[in-house]
Length: 183
Image 1 (cartoon, rainbow, N blue to C red):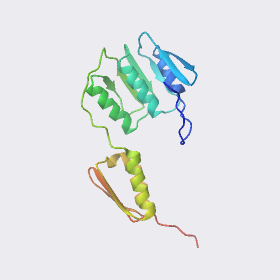
Image 2 (image 1 turned 45 degrees about the horizontal axis):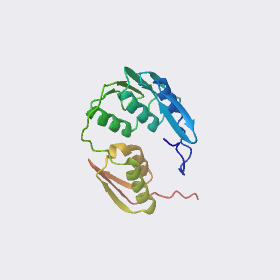
Image 3 (image 1 turned 90 degrees about the vertical axis):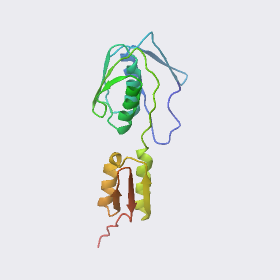
Image 4 (image 1 turned 135 degrees about the horizontal axis):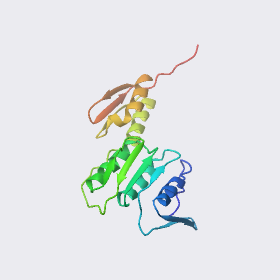
């Protein structure tokens, strides 16, 4: 697979992904801008990630589902997307515990099967609409989302003067951020 790049948000290092796969028995080389990985079979391992990485946690959790034995991901990411991926993998027959915490345990399976799964709504997109509404002093309702995934953002907007109403699967942001002028 090609190395990540071309992204305006900054560097996206994959060293933790590669180190984790190598601990599980893969041989990884970078050749002409591509990661070439090979293995005769992955095995469980204890993997302590130096920094929290969402995509690294996801990649290693997926690899561990078919590895032989138990894999422990320590200092794992806790974002809702991690738990959503774990729910999908469990629906496919994977054995995963601890998603949503800093320590995830994956007991390797011989094989996975298909399943139906609805991916959670994009909390970054929903939060962007909330902030845009507050900045423009608008009135925006975001439906079909999980407001509990946006507690910090919605609380902050409320504290800055925006009127925030939260429903079960929607929220509304009215008004805007109050300016604080110095006299």
